[in-house]
Image (cartoon, rainbow, N blue to C red; front, top):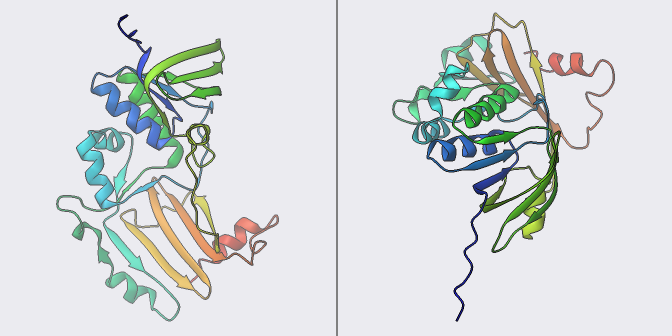
Length: 259
């Protein structure tokens, strides 16, 4: 009887998608001594309305994984209070009754904020520094799963094919890895629009306080990111798709936050 052939993979792990999830995983695994190939499609991370607020229990997880100090060193800062505004609520009274966000997890003062593009880039750079092979401007042409997971891709240096012990899809809801694996995407039917805008020059905003509230059928959130930047979010009925459309859309959106 012939012995079974032993397949030696090029990498322990190939991660398709170098956003927050992919970058964090690549950093942790590379620091643990594993060989990692991290593939990211974009050349530059664009600002997106996501991935910039880490809950207190998520902060505890970043500490467990050893990436908390990396995020703080990159400018991540804690929010310590939540102010709940709303129709019929006096703003000054709401501010007096602000919730202490350090109440949820011991030794965590509150959520950690860091802007989405900067968050992604910080973890991508950390993965590279830890020894991962990090690639940008990548087009994934084929993902083969099974006994010998393989990823074929193209970047600025040409076409490549690498094998791994494990392939991870961190490439979003349209994930090519998910489709290859035959994993069904489950989602709730949309019922509201949820939009966001990054406001700069808001130096009067208390950088330790986040806010939430309602005004009629409009629900709003605000998370300061430091250095005068505040991300504001608004949720409104799905029937009102054009509520903030047009050249004056951004102005209308900001005005919706007037209390």
